[in-house]
Figure 1: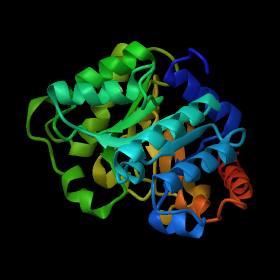
Figure 2: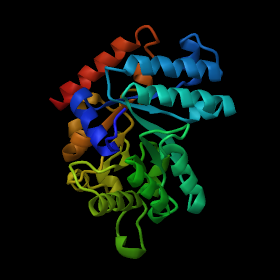
Figure 3: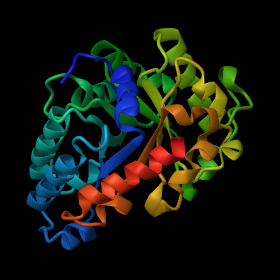
Length: 288
């Protein structure tokens, strides 16, 4: 482990291991295919095997917390082990928790996932701003205090979100922007007013299958320093092609986290290292 902040560690991961991020998603069917029980024990073994295969191959992993949460207290206990082992392996860990609330509740979520020494400590967490970007002040301050990161949901890849994400803001200084574009703009402004350096620690979630012009996302603004990193689901199983990353994200591709889960994990435990190596090569070729 190092004392470098999230933005610096993310930039180093891009330079040393590339842009691929492997999801740790113990789906029910994957546990069965891996010969593991549908339980916290199975999810524990699954997560540790993925961490072991990722170490030295990629720089970033993204545990999907829901697949552990469903097993209750035992699920959280084994998730703590997976998070700890991943961070001890030098991996940048993005906890995919998608928490969103306000006041003391969102403050507590930030403390749970971003405080050093917390049993659930990660390097960054996904978070929702749909109760207002201003409601995120406490986790934003927590991230700044401890050198952590946030990825704010802006334009997700699920089609059900389009109606909300393309709605036009009618209040405050963002009149005329889409909701997604407004969230991205607030992230950009926060990074610029609070941080220096090539990459900011506060990023956005932008699905790779989204039409960014439709949802009002300004990729060039996201890329201008300090760049707001992009967590990009939708590659592989969901249909986006790794070779299209530069076309899809344009000027912001340099700070895009290219995530893939099922397209890698479905290879099974024995073939997992080779599957990761192949995806790493594909992503590196896309950036060449």
